Structure formats: structure tokens, C-alpha cells
Image (tube, rainbow, N blue to C red):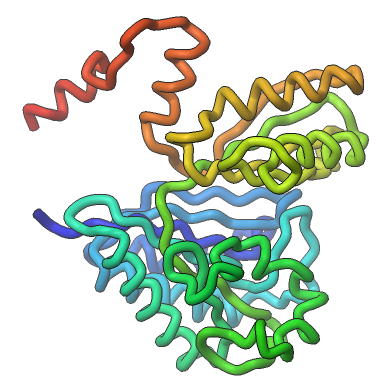
Amino acid sequence: MAEIFECIPNFSEGRDQEKIEKIVEPFKQETGVKLLDYSADKDHNRLVVTMIGNGSALKNSVLKAMEIAVDLIDLNQHEGEHPRMGAVDVVPFTPIRGTNMEDAVKLAKEVAAEAAEKLKLPIYLYEEAAATAERQNLANIRRGEYEGFSDKIKKEQWKPDYGPAELHKTAGASVIGARMPLVAFNVNLDTDNLEIANAIARKVRHSGGGLRYCKAIGIDLSERGITQVSMNMTDYTKTALYQSFEMIKFEAERYGVKIIGSELIGLLPAKALFDVAEHYLGVENFSGDQIMENRLLEDL
């Protein structure tokens, strides 16, 4: 069975379409890589790319894209709602088929070492690839963001895993790691009051006493005149999407705010939606075997 990994790099560019296409081009050209999706958001000012492939091909394409992004993106001129510390902000690898988490960690470390050497970029390892518990959580590493990282990186406990112990002058620092599939799920609110979105996010996320496998922040979608609770569901098998949706709806009611929609960024496993269908439709003993397309694929 051929090895397949998924990689979902996040770049700090969501507004300049010409730059976006240049960053994505290596994933279109590399043999052994299949580009599944890429989406850019102007408010977040962020590009999220999703692709699958074998380890060697993914490594080659990611390194090429990182080099392009470092050349094109200047964090000194970057503004956006999403937290960030680097032009290439985060690069996670996920084992999909014929591989395991240990393989994904090995791949992440290889990419981190080569990128640091070639691009003179400080790089941190996170999640399953992290050397210490403190660095497993991306939010811990990224706290302070680009503007506050010049001092942070000089502290011994925040010395990069690879590369120089100083920020790249335009590209900042990057985080690379291995993790299980993550679902980027956002819920839109009918208010332009960012304080309300932030208050709801604090209640929903694990660090605020909320859902165990949910990270959440409030986002101002100024172009639409609304706000958003932007979430990373880090283990959809243990904290379902419907749980976060219902908790946001519950918390929003105290402010007289309603949910007006939601969105998914990138791709998600089908199981994450099966749970939602089972919950809202009340389907008993629901199974993926009942999905027609799944049964058809078994015969291919």
C-alpha cells in the first residue's frame, strides 16, 4: 500500500491573488502530490492549502512553496484578524494511509531541518513532533505573534528547534509538526460587536473551561459587518462539530445574538459530518456503511 500523508500549510496571505497563485503553484506541479483545496480569506488575511501525497513529494513541494512565501510575504506590512507569527505560519503533516504518526513526525522534522537551513528561518516543532509539553500547543508557541516575538525568541525556553535564534526580518518564524486531522470550523454571528464574539469564544474553548478539543477566538469580519467565532476542532471524534455549534448558540442568546451561518475552511473527514447528521436527524445506529458512495468505493 502506497504511503499517503496529508499536509495543510497556512500562509499569511489572503488578499493578493497573484501571490496566492505563486505560493500554490508547487503543489500543482509536483508529481506525487494531489492538491485538494486552497482557500484564502481577506479578513483573516490567510491562505490554507490542503494536499495529499507521498512523503518525498510533499517535502519537495512544501519546501518550494515555503521559499516562495518567504520571498513574497513581509510580516512588517501584514494585517489580519488571524493570529500569526510567520509568512509560513504553520505546516502540519497528518498520516492518512500506509503511514503512522511516527512517520509523520519524521517527515515534519526533515522539512523543518531543511527549511531552516535553506531559508535561515527559525522553526518550532509542535503537537506530536514537539520536544516538550509546552510546545505541543500551537497557541503557546505563537503567543505574542510576530510583533512580540523578537524578545520572546531570545529567551532560552523559546529557542527554536531549528534555525537561528532570531526572527527572519520579513518572514518571522514558522511552526511545523504532526497531528491528527483538524477541522477548521467557523460560526458567524449577527453582530459587529467583537467583544461579544470574544466573550463567546472564551466560553467555548477548552482553555476557558469549555469544550475539551476546541480552540476558539473572536474574529471581526469587517467587510460583512459581522463577527465570527473561529474554531479549530483538534479532535472531532471526541468533541463533535454540533457540540461547538450548540454551545455558541446557547452563549449567544444571553447577548440577544443569533447565528447566521457557519463555514468550513479546507477539507474535513466524512465522519465529522456523520456525527452532525446523526445528532440533528436523530438517526439511530447510523453507520458510514449506509452512505451510498462509501459502498460504491469499496468495489473500486
